[in-house]
Each structure stands twice: as structure tokens, then as C-alpha cells.
Length: 371
Ligand SMILES: *Cc1c(COP(=O)(O)O)cnc(C)c1O
Image (cartoon, rainbow, N blue to C red; front, side):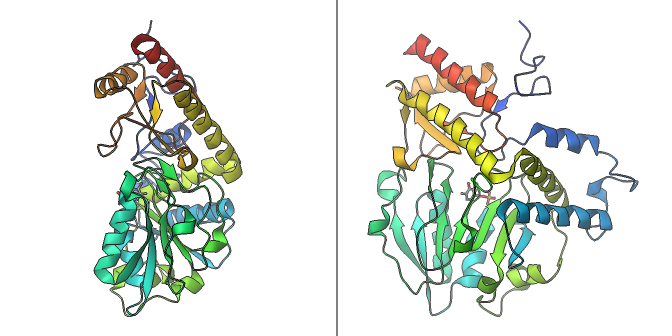
């Protein structure tokens, strides 16, 4: 039998490229990587690569405008929405959101459903009255609090929530039903399914989970919400600076890759199409987990994430072996986050269905030998 380095796995084009279940930075569509390769070291006829030219050149401007146009098409965004390509990751948004939108004499509500949500709350509390509307920390963020027990402030400037809990593997099935504008950290499920855009004031997502490489943070902000921001604000941290003009050098290569990923997604059929694929992948994996007592899902079944699937084996010893042997079988990065333990399979948009099939086969095989 050929070595893994020499084999082309089903669904892949490059020998030695394995099935990647990393949580982030995560798998990118292989056609996008091949296009990047083809466009280095020369982009079109500009005499240089896209990394080496001005961010105000017609070529880069065109890339950024096309990325925005793709996003508008994918999400059905009207002209009321600004699309920003910022830096600092989702983590800087934890600060920038309340800095702009938590009024000095007002409040904002937070749904604390995971460690990222908790970090967002912490940054907001440095700045003002950020309230915990609900929390699932009592059971290690393994479920979503029942909306019936949420303690909402009807006068809150916004409700902040994390649509998908990357670490513990829970996900909101739909938007929280509240009167105030939603602010969402969508880092780990952005563009994985259609959303009800009218409920949001602002959405942010680090690109490195589901839409591109590390280095750019996508921020969508609705104009009427933007106008409510606090003033004055430090220039770079004022969203208004970035909606007004290209203020400083953006992460050009990351935006360039994001444009390709968005085009790949449109060619696939857009959000309804990818949602169906994601649904099927998650279903297949959860069905396998539930098929025996050997594997045990860690998230409450009704809150299970379609992006990050978390499960345990009967012992830590077996979990270690599982991760090691999986790697030898061509399945990368299945080790769970240290705060949950066990196994985490991140199955974002660019994770091919063949990868999930291979994982399920490996799980059968592993249980037969160790169960
Ligand atoms: C990864 C992640 C973050 C952190 O993103 P950075 O870009 O590293 O700051 C925040 N929120 C969620 C939901 C994440 O998955």
C-alpha cells in the first residue's frame, strides 16, 4: 500500500493532503489553495504578486469590492449594511463593540454560553454595565439556557451572543428572539447557513474558522445601528472611521483569500446549499456517536453544533490512542480543547463530506478493536 504522503485521498487533489478537523485556523477549500498557488509570484499582468502592490491599487480595490459583492449576494445584504475587513481578531471585537455601542448610562445584555462569550462579557464589563442575561457555565457550557429563564433588559443597547460555541460544541439553532438589536460573534459558523439578517445590528467573525485564513476579521454593521455609537472614539477603534474610507493598510492577502472562499461558496449554491451539506455531515457524525455507548457526545443533544462535534471515549488513555491512530489513518487535529477533553471534530464548510465518511469508518474500526 502507498504511504499517506503519496496517496490522494477521496475528495482531494493533492497527494499527501489529509482530512483536517482543526478548530482554527482551519481547512480551506483545496481549489482556493490551488488558485492562490497559480497566482504566485505573478498576479494577472501587474508584474508582481498581489502581496506586493498598493492596497489602493485598482487590482486590490477590485478584490475587496468583489469580496463585498459576494457577501452581499450570499447574505442578501441591502445597502444599509457596511462590510469591514478589520484586524485584531474576534478578540478585539470583544472590546470594540462595547466601546462603540455600550452607552455610558445604559446597559447591554450578554448570553454567556461558552468561554468566548465569557471573554466578550469581561471586556464589556471594563467599559460599562454589561449584564449576564443568561449563562450555561454551571454545567461547563454543555447546553443553551432556556429562553424562558433569560433575564433581559428591554432597554439594553444590544444583546450579544455567540452563535456557535467552538470549544464545547453547542450552537443556537436560530437567532435569539428579542426586541433589541443582536450583536453576534459568528466566528465559528459564519456563512454556514442562512440567517435572519434583519434581527442584527452587527455581526463579526474572525475569518480563520469558516471563511478564510487568519489575519482578517469580517464585520458587518447596519447603518442605523452604527449611528447610535458613542462619540468621541479613538480613531482606529471607531467603526465609523472604517465605513467612511479605507483608513489604513488592510490585511490584503487575507482579504484576497476570503474573496476566493466566498466565490467558491457562491459556486456551490450559496448558504442554503452549504447548510444542507453541513447538516448531512453533522447528522452522519452524531448518528455514529449515538450508535453505541463507546462514544459519548458532550453537548446536550438539542444544542449540538453542526460545526464542532465534541465527544468522549471510555477513558483518557483510549482518547489519546484515538487521536494518534486517527492521524496515522490520515485524520488530523481531532484532539479536543483542554477544557473539555476528549475529541473535537471541526467540520466547517470546507471540510469535505469524504472526510466525515472517513472519520465515521475510522470510529467503527477503532471501536471494533478497543470496544
Ligand atoms: C476562535 C474564536 C474567537 C477568537 O478569535 P481570534 O480571531 O483568535 O481573536 C472568538 N470567538 C469565537 C466564537 C471563536 O471561535
